[in-house]
Image 1 (cartoon, rainbow, N blue to C red):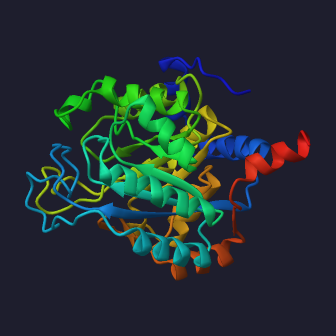
Image 2: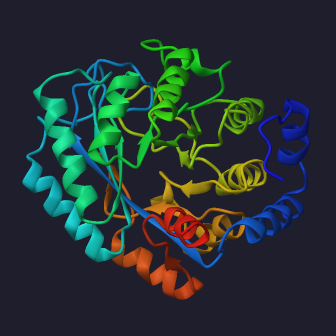
Length: 327
C-alpha cells in the first residue's frame, strides 16, 4: 500500500529494526512493486560549473570555498548533445544537466538550457535538470521543452538543515518542488548522509520525502563525498551499512519510487553495492563524474551488471506501460 501519511514513530520502528530483517522486508516490497532485475542508468553532466553564491557546506562548487574547482561558463549545446549521445550509447536512459546556479533567471542562458532540453528529449532519453530554485512558470517552460524530471534535493532533515546551508531555507526547497509538480514535471528529490547529522535527522528527511503530496519519481541517496576545502572535508567516511539502512527504509516508505544509489559509490565494493540493490536500490548514476566528484566508469558498472544479472531500465517505461493499459 502506497501511503503519504507516515508518522515519525512508524519510520523510526522501520529504520531501527534489525538490519537483516529490514533488508528482507525492503526486498519483499521491492519485488512486489518493481522489476528487481532492472536498474535505471542515469548520467549527470555539469553544464555550468563553479562560482555558486550558496554556502552548502558539502559543495565544491561554492565560490566561497577553495576547492580547486574553476568557474566554467555554460557549455555549448552541441557539446552537451554529444555527451548525451555518448551516454545513450553506453546504456544511460536518463540524462541530467546540472548548473551551479542559486536560481533560474529568465535570460539567454535559460533559453540555451531550454534548447538543450529539447535536443536531449529528441534523442529518446528522459531529460532531467538541476538548476537551483525556479518558479512555476519557469518549470512550465522546461516542461514544454520536454523536461521529464527536475532534481532539487532536501539534503537533510528540517531540523539539521540550517547547520549545512544558510543561503536558502528548507521552505524555499519545498516551494520549488511544489512548482515542479504543478508544472507536470516529475520530481527527483533526496538527500545526503554523512553531513554530521544524527540517525533521527535521517529519519526526519525520509519522513518529509514520504509525506510529500506525491512521492518523488526518484529519490537519490548520497553518501558525502569529502572534498578538500569544504567545511566537511574532515567528516568520517559513511559506513556502507548506513547506506543500506537508508535505501531499505526509503524503499519501504516509497515502494513505487526509483531509489538511486548515488554519490559515494567509488568508495564501495561491488559486494557493498550489491547489498544496496538487494535492499531496494534500482537506479544509479553512471559515468566518471557526478558534476565535479568521482564516480565509477560505464565499463565498471556494466561489468557489475553482468555479474549481478541486472539490465538497464528502458526510458519512459511507466508511460509506455500506461499506453498499453489505456490504448
